[in-house]
Image 1 (cartoon, helix red, strand yellow):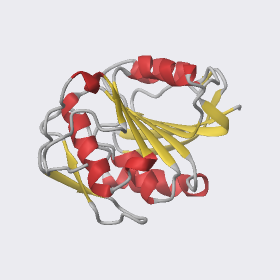
Image 2 (cartoon, helix red, strand yellow; image 1 turned 180 degrees about the horizontal axis):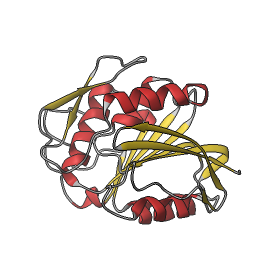
Image 3 (cartoon, helix red, strand yellow; image 1 turned 90 degrees about the vertical axis):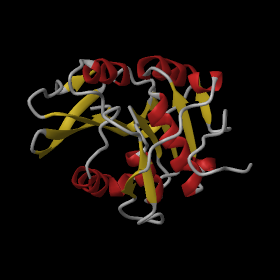
Length: 215
């Protein structure tokens, strides 16, 4: 299917959910890049304004370095995905498939363009909608993920609610990893159902907390 730069198709095959009700807005031209792997150096567009908070390069590097042993062929779930920088970085480093969940139309537009421009449509799925609702849909479909990353708005209680849902053991593969990015001064609990925290990486006001499914 032909694709014009800056325009998003009304309903590409890898995009499902609320976006099917109408075209998403065109993304802006703010640029990030894939840091490493097969797609190293490729450009990523991000949405205009403060709609999302892209994961900083320093944090992405540390995250991916920590996940390196688990990435090959992994099924990755990128929640509050924004323009998809984390999930696309995982695909660049040999993850098998990435599912992205994002609600904002401008962020979804950027994500659609990034997936298409990088040529990873066959290894990606974009769900536009509320994260908690989409988790229920994925669980109902019997989906399981080796790696789950979440970066919810820092000023909300969404991190705890989503970790509670993930701790139900319906979405994580045995021994799977869940990584929460959060405001350093608002850490999550150390346990959520079957999830147990085992590592923290701090970057000033941002911290990554790593959980393992199954204790």
